Amino acid sequence: MREKLNLFLKLHVKIKQHFPKMVWLNPEPETFWDHVTIASIRKAIKMYSLTLEGLTLAINDLRKGEGSLKPLNFLTKAEQAFITFRHPHEGG
Image (cartoon, rainbow, N blue to C red; front, side, top):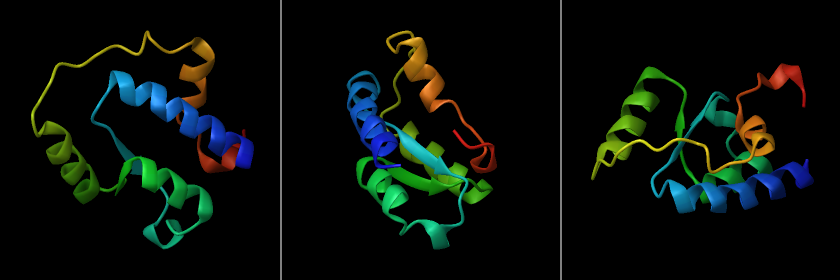
């Protein structure tokens, strides 16, 4: 688990260089956000709940000083696969 978190945090730096503004839409209930992994991610990326309200807040946050969308072609295929959503019960 710690290894995946470290990989994520390194990848975050690379993504942040390309996308200065980003948010995390967390599907986990907020009661779990104090877990060490989620808390670590939350320190690095602004986090919102994956709800209609959370999505609205995230969009409003991202729209401040709007910029153009950029493709993910700066990431390797392995990095793109790493950030692809997996349901928590799928493992991996």
